[in-house]
Image (tube, rainbow over all chains, first blue to last red; front, side, top):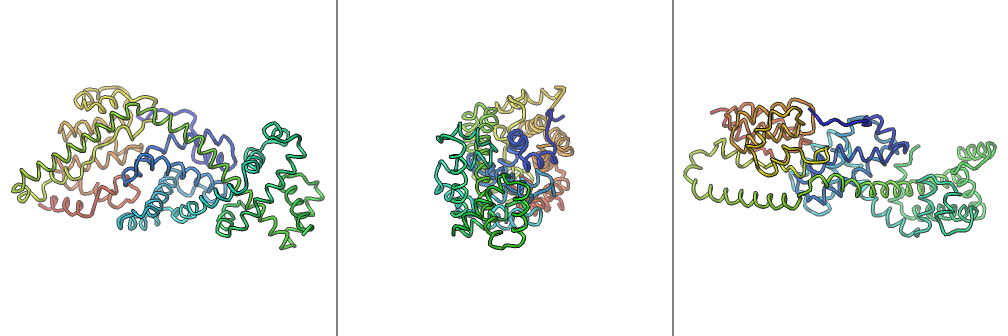
Length: 203
Length: 250
């Protein structure tokens, strides 16, 4: 009856992959293929445009991965249900931000909260989003790149030398250390951002 | 101050896994006992979290563009669809105005008519938005998109039908006003676990209005109304429920 899909990750595998950064791109693609349709129709059925639906889905993916990495979602509900709820709350926050949420939608949101607790998470992530991007902007392009290469893409010092305008590993090492300390300083100067990021540090 | 810088360097090396076993153990003891040292460590952890969130964001952004091309490539004649949707809405508006002018008396007499409820509640299914997982539109999707509803109905003998195909067949029967057949197809889709189950429930409820099975329609509308996560939740108001209930008690 349904279209056959080969070699799909199960919910448990999706959680494991994204939490541990294994096959994460393939896993994210699968989440798009399986959920974009339903979630984008929700936004479009609730006064959102096609573009809104796409933007919100992208935010849902970012939020979901961050929650998994922080160990804040462990499969308490199905992934689909959880994403649906995140999508809804992120969209409702966006409507509120635009001052367009109707009474009905707010009532609806209250109902929603009884199902899966994602309203607070959605709010939290949206508040930090611009703060985070501004702070990293203040860090400068080179620093951002060094830190991303080392701490996100797990590149070795040797590989990094090839991608950066620095002569040798020692220079890159010193620069990386300086950049991380500078970033720590910047984040510390923004208590709201600091507290929210702290909630996502996996203990 | 220089002590603090020294501590930070030590912690960065600890985070990067560059310390010897002895040095590592010493840092861990200090983390337990020295609150200032612990706070410095936490500041670095929070900074790393900022970088990781940026990394996640960039990774998703790249995949997002790629996937939008893949998923939207499927609804190739997007412009045509948008146009036809506009036409459909215009027609709907025109039809409503016609109903308003022609049927004022009729309206008073049939305030709770199932036809009125049907017309007010019906929203057409957008094939283009409901992207299928196949790379191309199925034969049924293409026919439906071209409004060849009879053509769709004629395809029902095809061997393997996806849930979406079955839904579109039901919708085609709605368009050709074969309510019984529509209800049968929607029922099939609504009782199995698939992506279009909620669509099927909504349209099945509408079909039941036409087949005058009001109790069944009422049950389905109630279910959609009660479930805020239902994608047609917004289409089912308390007023609608009350109207259907009145039909049932007549």
